[in-house]
Length: 609
Image (cartoon, rainbow, N blue to C red; front, side, top):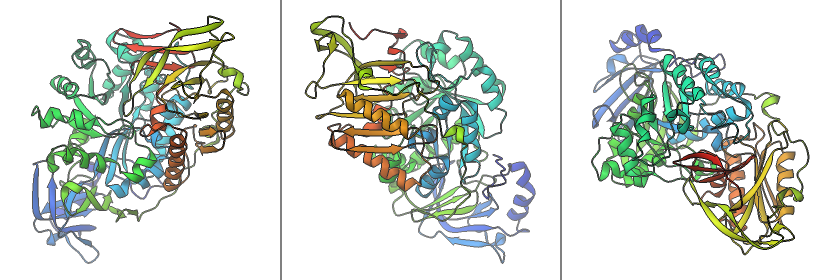
């Protein structure tokens, strides 16, 4: 992986450029820059724990691994005593959207490096849906300034599905994909192909994007939510899609692996899938070499309180996976899936020196030190390295464009009858899952308007287009939010088109919440009759430039405000941010209306039944 950048002191030259110095160090003619001595090696290649091993490093890469590396030590070699510690490859996240942490890449790196994450495969389709190719380039450029082995994917679904169903800030097709794939080896492939019906039924745009990726010799990532035994999964795989994170059952894992795909087992903040999916190994005995542990989306709150991939590895071990096997699923398996195992994913000669030292029981995944690109970057849970911050331009910080101020009248739902009750579709939220259900509810009508109150168990949901000032908006119903008093939340974090979404049970509070978010040029606001809790996200309406700890505190305040209003969903904000995602079953709302997602396809449906 070559990511040369003039602002980056953590450059990762390609292996070909390093061979002379690595060989000279390995034979003892050139002193190592760093030696890690006398630890227990977690060998994810052989699946062994090997005691009394040492590692000699030259610059950013490993030169020698063995029982005795004394011949590589010179006068200026830094030596780290690893006696009593485990030495493991740095952890890799095989599927992650950095924007969903509400952090910039810089602050994300500072949050996860002390936790043992040294790299990952990131799909910036959130910022791409807002800013297009420039947004993707900003994140690629910023990632290159950090110590992370950060591989970016080109967003495949901008928009996520048929543009007739929603409005986004940009549009990608085969030409845009082909252009971005030329930016460097660290642009690794095509991000999750959420428009899986388009692939299966031969949509020219989706097929063209996949073809451009394959012609570039890069990978195609997947997102398939039809049932595991659906006849169309092999059709999807035939297109060259080789991995999928939408596995929620052991059967999902089995069917994907049998087709040669990688099954990503996800443990995010708001969706907890590892306990079920890992049974494909622990109960059914499937080989784990095509199983990966991923986060998908973890909030800054979760990073602070629970951790990142270290948390997922620990959780997998708790489900009965052997520790070495769990480490494989977050290191070498991931590197092999993306074709970069020569550079990352193991502690072997020639590989990048991304190494973590762990104390205590290996199953506890207690990271004491993180080394990235041959440099110590974190110790005892704290960053010890720093680098120059990346500056996002003004166009990335002014992305909320409405054609007028939103008022409480915008949230009125006109009914087809003047008085009585009427049946309507509501989006039913399911805790800890990305999918929703379509729920038919009976709602009271008075004066040709739908009436809800705090005791009905229902709230309104509205989506306002915020990219182009079109004036498009739609209003629907949502259940199982839990508000027990007048309350509203507004947010520009609304996967994947990231329009302005407002949820609440009081029209005036919904209008106020929207106005707060617009005034911040993006972010989140929870409003009750007593209090307003803001969370500014100025960069694309998705990310904050504030330090990680500040963002985590602000995110936690939103969670607490929702909880105080009665919304006790686990990681409620992240769950609510998915209610406009029109590619995950069963019912969603876009700026153009209600969208039904089923095995029969994706289509608009009316509110009233």
